[in-house]
Length: 492
Image (cartoon, rainbow, N blue to C red; front, side, top):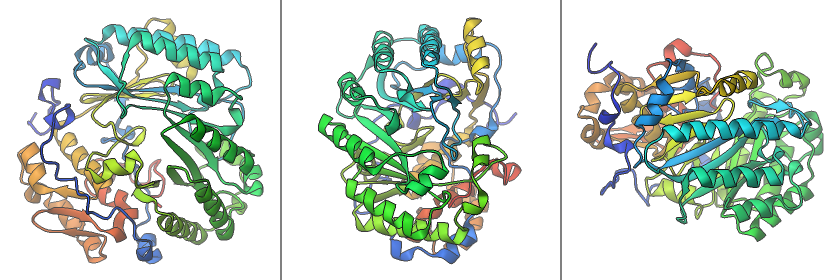
């Protein structure tokens, strides 16, 4: 076993994954243009490179999970460095309605008692994991996802939050990020006020589209008046950042209808937008079988929708963060990118990449030091493990030295459009131009197409190539060849 392939011990974790001060950050550049430059949107180039590929919320990606050995999760938790702050993720899988496009891990139910039963399992998992951890790591980030987190009643949300306060110490810094995903249809009159009072400071509203015909086709009907109402209330209550999710490529969407939706959303003025490409995979997601494939827009129309959306958001002053995310220039996500402090993890783009991620609930994922662990995706399996007094992780990825190197390269390309060879050499004691000679050769065609630029200093993703950042990252993914076309969505 060579040094390049052997698993690392936690004591060998490179310092960039520890909370250390970096005096000079090569990725901080206030003068760099974080835009797609919509006038450079080139349909021919995008069609040329539009293939399936990972979203790189981790590296290695989730397809590399393997069964976990007995006792390993306990060891990982016990060895977690208490100096490293934590990000907490809670998966609430329940929804009252099935949105036909959805590919999330969810359970459709109208039984309110399901949430109370689920909380008992969450509490047991939290207690067990916390009992194994050393010291008192500070919580800098919390995210409630789903499903529909507000399937929990207001009282249950308070109960869960108050329980967390007994188990962890929460940061009171202005940079602390406490967020929740919200289906506007599932809000009670007091829910937003209660969430803000607890300490939540960021919300994400699932909108997807404002056209009624489209909403009916995907079984998610919510009026523009409702969306404006929850946005107004969230701003009145002082939430720091409000995100809206949109999807292009849904049934009955047209170029004109999508343009109209985007214009109306810009008028509502969210701080962030996530504009997702609908991937129609009915063989994987049963709910999508309710969608008539003949009602879907053509690939050409989808590409036009994307181009128009980029143009409209750019003209409205939004900064393109990467992949499918946009933010106002004064939003902390945009600021972090300009300052070279942006990261990616299983929650997408984040300003808290220095944290260990602790996931709780069915299907949730933790990332602790060198290890990525996943709970069962089946609720019964999860509950059976908790009932047996066991830790619930069933899958694991343990990073090797080359994984850490490639993770660092991929994440900087996706977050900052640049990889600095001098920086990589300082952190990993390699000559990047020699180590990545094959990858540099593969990027030659992208350089000819003016998607990237390369020289002795590093690799830059050019404005014309920003939409295809995943393609650039894929060149550095050594696992991808064996997974080509397997379970990934198209990059555009």
